[in-house]
Every structure is written in structure tokens, then in C-alpha cells.
Image 1 (cartoon, rainbow, N blue to C red):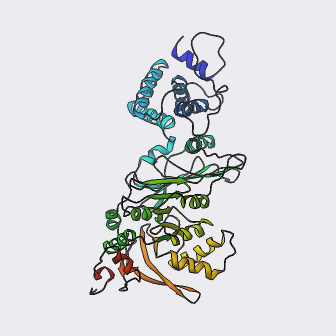
Image 2: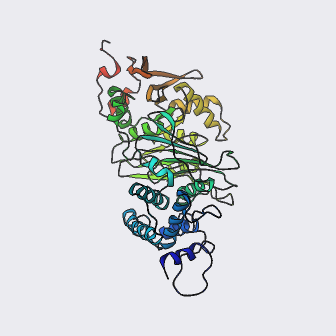
Image 3: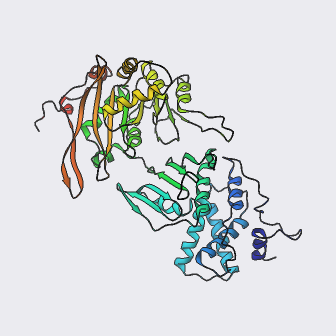
Length: 479
């Protein structure tokens, strides 16, 4: 029986009888378990073959050709193929691809053939139309607003790109491919989900009936090579003096909160600061979707879990913070405090887990304190405001404010010490502040400057054997 005949039977009607083994039948393929093995991932792809429009002619448009070749490839591939072995599978796909084109006498130019092969390979091994965007290191964010509207962020600016999905179902297949290996689900009963890509990039998906424009997918990309301190200085996000000061604070085990608006670069700065933690310390990271890329050897990564389809089994950030205290941590890093776990984080900072770090959404250091108070109240403990403020002033040493400027650049705008309490008010001292001097061609100009004040916790830094020159704080400098 010819290859074409076998594949058509595998993708169409039920076989008439025995004989040559058939490709897996879509209506007989069981649903693969979430987070299953590689063979179940391929079986899932085969079960979800792209359906060409009803009645589409065999010699139809480019889309119909791509659909036919792609379905035949999926039908011909062995379900036990390990799709994680990308190069090996790519060679298998290349051979089958050429064979199918020859069987059907399909004549394509070399650019057309290359384009068709790359698109089909992206559908089988990658994330479809998004694959080229994910591989472009200049893109920092991808926004899919339904199948026909895709936007990207590049250098802080948002642009629309001439790339589309075939349909809402096509977008849904890509979303399912992202969330299924993580054991998460998205459907009408749970129409939004947070997830991550294998490289740690943050993913959020929202589908109908909540979204009225079709499936919406937002990907916050992480660089394959995390941004280094030198790069942040080169991008003028921070100065060498401020880096030297923050490095000393981390090594001296001061507690740091990084605050900022959405997309201001809080997680990036947290990654950079965590790189200053000595290699001989036990670090426990707690996140909703694991994003931090710590380079130390002794790191334990914990990730929260949403409820299952019966509404059970949820593991919250607060549960993980409480549990982390029993794991003999030397440093606790919470990717983001957004609820009652903030109170547990403050208690951890106050009970021997010095040097812990977290992030919070806020526009200024003072706003960050107000938000921390509000999140502590979300823990359900009927605590007086003064008691919460005393906890905050005792636990937090520094607030590092990150801001996304009008030109799209990210800059550290404040490094502020929490210096104590005066009455019922937490007192703060700015150690570094960003001074904007103007704009040049739309680009924000300015510099993070020392205020000339030394923080009260300098004794902690000196006790750790670290001595910072007075010039770092602007003392003795003539500017």
C-alpha cells in the first residue's frame, strides 16, 4: 500500500480491515495525562491534527497544503518518538516531508519549501507562529489578542507584527501545549491560567467566555542569558556606586523589597541581586510560576499550584512560605508578594532569616509600605496598624524602587532605607535617588545619584567585614 494511501486512511475514514498498521486514529486516541511522557505529547499532537476547512480542494491554498502535509507527517511519525530530542526528530521530519512532497508531486520553490518546513516543524516541536518571535532575542514581550492580532514589545515600544494564527482553535492548541506539561488546565470552568515556558518566560492566558476577542496570550520573555550587572550599568538602569552598595547589602544579609509597576523590571533586578548571595548558603525560592534564574548550587525552587478540576489541591504562596520555614533556609526569596503571604514573609525576616528578598507592586517607596500593610491585613489576622508597621520597620531594611520610563527604559529610581518608627509613622531615608536632567530625542536622560546620607545600618555592613568608601554615598564628591 502506498504511503499516501496509508496516510489518507490514517487521517480520514476507519480502515476497512487488517493489513498494514494504520496511523493512530484521532477518535480512538485517549486524552494524554497532564505532564505526561514524550510519547503522550506526540500522541496528543496526532489526536489534534489541524482540520482543513470542510470541502477544501486537494490543490487548494497554501494553508490547505500546509494542513495536509502536517497531518500526514503526524500520522506517519512513531507515537513513541522522543520529541525532546529536537535535532533527531527534525531529521525524521525532514525525510518524511521530502517523501510526502514527492508522493503528491508537489512542486515548490526553495524559499516556499523552506518556509513550509519551518512552519510545520514549529507546529510539531515548538509553539507554532510564535516560535520565530520567541527565538528573536530583541523581543521582550509577546501579546496575542485573538488569532489575527499579534503585538510585540521591542526596546520598550509595542508594535504589531504581520503574523497570524489560522483560527481560535489554533491559538488554543498552542496554549494547551504550554500549560499541559505543567499539570495546569484551561477551559470554560477555569478560563485563565498563569504558566511558564521551559526557559522560564512568564505566560498568562485568558480564553472565552471571559475574553470577547478570542484566546488571549501574553508572554513575558526571559533572555536565554540573564541580564548581568554590567549590562544594567551599560543600559544606564543603575550606577556602579549603587551596585556596589546593593552588593554589600546582600552580602551583609539585609532584607530587601523591590517595588515597581507592572513591567518595570522587578524580577530582572531580583535576579541580579540574588546573584550576590554567597554560594555556600541554602536558598529557597517561592513563586507562582518559576522565573528566577539563580546560579548558586544550593537552591530549592518551590512553585504554587492551582486547584484541580474538583476545586481541590491548591497550594498557595502562603502555604509555601510557611512550609519553607521548616526547610532550614538561610535565605527566602519570594518572587512576588501579593496577599496574606506578606505577613508570613515579614515574620520570617524577623525570626532569623536575614537576607531575604521579595518584590511588590508599588509606584514609590512610600506606596510600597502602604501596600505591604494592606497585604498583611489580607492574611485575615485582626492586627492593629501600629503592630503591622512595627513588623515592617523591624523586618525591611531597604526598598529598591524600579520604574519604567516614558521612553520604555527601566531604571532604579530610589534606594531607600527603612530607618525606624516615629510615633505611628515609619521613617524612611533616601540613599540614592534618580535625577532626570531632560530628554534627548525622546530618550530620558538622568542619573541615579547619592544623596550624601549614610544609612543607619552601615554598622551591619561593617560587621560583615565590608568597608564602603565614603565617595559611594556622595560624601566628599564635588558635583
